[in-house]
Amino acid sequence: MSYDTVRDVDPAVADALEGERERQNDTLAMIASENHVSEAVLEAQGSELTNKYAEGYPGERYYAGCEYADEVETLAIERAKELWGAEHVNVQPHSGTQANMGVYLAMLDPGDRILSLELEHGGHLSHGHPANFTGKTYEVEQYHVDAETGYIDYEELHEQAEAFQPDIIVSGYSAYPRDIEWEEIQRAADAVDAYHLADIAHITGLVAAGVHSSPVGIADFVTGSTHKTIRAGRGGIIMCDEEYADAVDSAVFPGGQGGPLMHNVAGKAVGFEEALEPEFDEYARQVVDNAVALGEQLQDHGFSLVSGGTDNHLVLVDLRDSHPDTTGKEAEAALEEVGIVLNANTVPGETRSAFNPSGIRAGTPGITTRGFDEEATREVADLIARVVDDHDDEDVKAEVADRVAELTDEFTLYE
Ligand code: DSN
Image 1 (cartoon, rainbow, N blue to C red):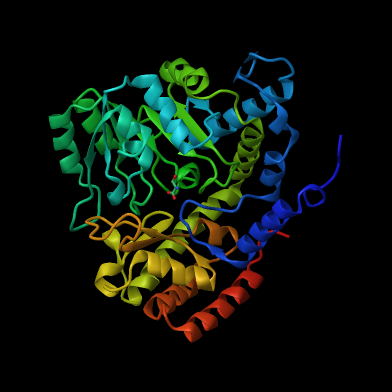
Image 2 (tube, rainbow, N blue to C red):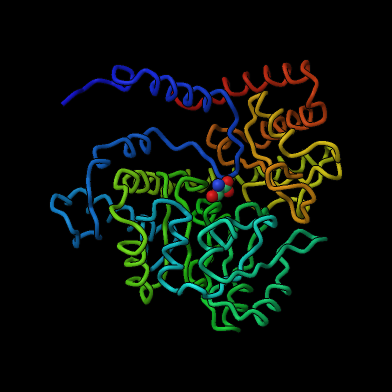
């Protein structure tokens, strides 16, 4: 057995790994779906469990030698049940999309009908986009946010459900800044005898901490990813009532996946343990407070926010009113130059394209992990405004980059 380090074996990859650590240390991660996990989660994900095959579930594996895999997976499941209050949990999906796939495979047949929010309005690829397996396998119709308010148009959702008669309604979103009326969506599903899948990928941590309403106990299925606001190991999760447990478990394995990524399941278990600590609730509260501060300060600088603000961890800026000649991609590129990493995003009523849209999406989970409070976050909004206002001005960008470097030095991340 070789005990050489990555650097000994593969300097090129070692350079890239070090580069990535430095990049994360030296920039502000404001992509709303990203966060920084603890060293403990990193350690678990880099453990020897990466070597282990463990097809099946705790106590019922297809391979020998699974006693520690069983222990870790059981811990992840029990902690998830405590965090979200779910009856049944499957922690094996490799990602949020795989979690959604598990539910579709469990409950739908090819050609069945999905009603979901359009991607441009805040939905997700795995909710029925034509380029995704969901769009190719199922018949999909999409609901929208109200053009004026930016809030989900629940009335349209009810009408569309009546007209389309879906087999499943998908709620939970990727670029939607407002609280979600789960019960309203459940009513729409009940009225047409459809299942309700709530995809809480973005807001897992906020829901666990009680700073966002929870669909658990309302929707039939709740899916999520485990590395966003909940800040655990990378992957997905499915929660449901006992009545669907067997269907979901066999849809994940053997239906859609082979061996689980047990090192990632270990990372999930460790992150969930951290999230059960009272400090995590404070963290989640601060994530939302920071997003509100970010949004208000951007509005003070003249930016338009879709829905006029936020209730969660992200803001969605529609640049068309304040900066009609600046695209989301131009803003994203200029901000990346100064060390503020967020993403260009489509906005409701998009008039450009998915590749070069009219908005930017910014989230606070990452900077809150670094220790940013509202005051520091407001300063980040000032910096974003300066750069977007003068995105071709090299002097402005150099000054802002210096200030970002001071902030990343003050709010440290990885050793
Ligand atoms: N890619 C994620 C996001 O940015 O929202 C969702 O999968």
